[in-house]
Each structure stands twice: as C-alpha cells, then as structure tokens.
Image (cartoon, rainbow, N blue to C red; front, side, top):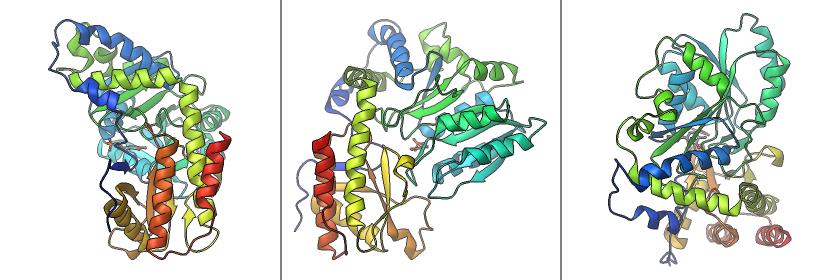
Length: 398
Ligand SMILES: *Cc1c(COP(=O)(O)O)cnc(C)c1O
C-alpha cells in the first residue's frame, strides 16, 4: 500500500527543498520597482552573495537558470574563436562545453570519465604544451551533479600556476555553492557560475556570475559583449533597473534575501560542516548496503565525493524501480541517473541520485535512507546490513 500521504520530499539535485521562510517572503504583493525597500535591499544581497562564495570581487545577477549563467559567463570572458580547455567529469561539464561550441568557442576537452575527479597533472601538461597561450580559459565543474564527482579546484589553480599559464579559471559551482567549501579569492578562482535553486534554496530563476579583476580586464579587452549578458551595468548600475537589464526578479529577490539570512545566521562554515556530516551519513549507509549485492557508490574515494549529491549504481532496472517505489509508496522523489547511459539502454535504469543540498537536516537524511532501505527490501534487492545504523552513528558522532 502507499504510505506517501504526508509532506512530499523532493530529494533530487535541484530544484532543492525551498524553506518555508523563503516561500513566506515570496508570498507578497508586487513591490514597487522604482523606489523603496526592493531598491534598498540590493546592496545587501550583493554583499551577502559575495560572502557565500568568499570573494571581495563582483557578482552579476541574471534572471535565468544555470544555463543562462553558463552563457553569461562565456559571453563576458571568452570571444568567439578563442580556445578554452574543458575539464570534464560528467554530463554538466560536457553540456557547458557544448554550449560554448555553439557560441563559436573552440573547445578542447580533457575527459576524466564518469568516476574520477580532475587530475591536475594532466591539466599542467596540456597547459605547458600550449606555449603560445592559445587557451584563454580553463572550464571546470566543482561538483558534477550527474556523477557526484567533486574536484579539487585549488589544485587546478596550482596546476595552472605551475604551468605559468595566464588562462582564466572559470568554475561551475551551480550544484554545490553553499554545500561544498568554496574560497573563490583564496583559491585564485577568476570566475564562478552559480544559480539559485540548489544550495541557495530559492526557486529556479536566478543565475549568478562572480568575477574578479583579471576576468574584468579580459572582458574590457573584448571587441564586443552582448548587451543583455554584459556584466558591467549589472555590477556598476546607474539605476536600479540596470542590475537586471530591465524589470527586477521581484519575488525571487525576497526569497533570496531570506535564504542568505538563513545561510549567514547559521554561518557559512557551519553550513559546509552540516553538508559534510549529512553527506557522510549517506555514504556510510550506501557503503554498508554495498557490502553485498549490486549497490555501489559511483565515486569510490570519499575525498572526491560531492557534499551536495550522491550518485549510486545498482543492477538495472532497480534504479528506476526504486525511484518509482519511493515516490509512490513513501513520498520521496530521488534523482534519475544523468549522462551515465543512453535512455534507450537497459543500463539507464541502473542509476539514481540522492540530493543532500541546501535546506536539509539529519531527520530528512535519515528519512530518505530509511525509505530507500524499505524500498530495496520491498523490491528484493540483495544488500549488506547495517546501513541505517552506520548513518545514525555518523549523525550521533556529529
Ligand atoms: C543544475 C546544474 C546546472 C544547470 O542548471 P539549470 O538551472 O538546470 O540550467 C549546471 N551545472 C551544474 C553543476 C548543475 O548542478
């Protein structure tokens, strides 16, 4: 029978759970966009967005999703015909590269596969071989949401420095900003792409491009920048409308204000630590279950696992059947496998993902894991014992 009637839980890696406080702030009459509170709120939103990414530089806000921010970043920092080096660790990196190609950018890719992080040594090799400095930017995804691989961004910067290469370091943090540690300035990241609907706990609709002085100088040297994506007016507005090149995302700004308050009240270090402990609880459960049968964490080395999402391999078709069981019987929706196999292939049904990004706490994680165990048993999937005990131990030790 179905035990799904209660508060549903969307545990997919974006959109993430929207806190009631964010929803309440959005539930209001349209505010005036010419004077008053909304205009006065904006400098504080910019300040706090910068605190979340640990940067003293600039952030441009776009009405759009992650794809919009991807395009905005490239439109400001790379000219058509320029070459970029894409470091691929899953579907999201690959998609950013395809978008770049369609913008006329020459994309050279190092593919690290679907189970390993970026290898900085290979990045150095390619950059050292590029004596003429034809590569203008290195594109990396910190946590690839498809594979749940976390790459060491500070190590990528070191590799670029070791090669004495001047390319910009551009990082997609859409999945993991405010989940996995990000120190934009300390790590020497030149540009970050982010969006509202994952760690930032606000509905989809806002994209963010953070950029430093080096990226600003590159933009200033470009022959032409699309007027809508141009980050100059958005970061140095002469009137409020210039922040958004038109009407402001009124209600999203109220939601974002509430989410930034929640993150900064908790403290960004505490937010990262919470994500770390909850992710470890998830990993502990799957490690125990994977002792027997066909369940397996996609990323073997825990140092290379995202704290925002965990990708799981399981004998097909049990990935799909487990997701269906949880949604219809338990009120929990898990993420599909993305970019791991063709949808027409039986193997496609051998993956699922558990999100633990944003507004997530211990009881939600234990609830997801408990219902996954129930689902595995209902479907007769062979598994190791002790998964829930292992997860509870991680949480009790925290
Ligand atoms: C979600 C996500 C995207 C795409 O964001 P959209 O809002 O769906 O356009 C890109 N990169 C990463 C790492 C993501 O997690």
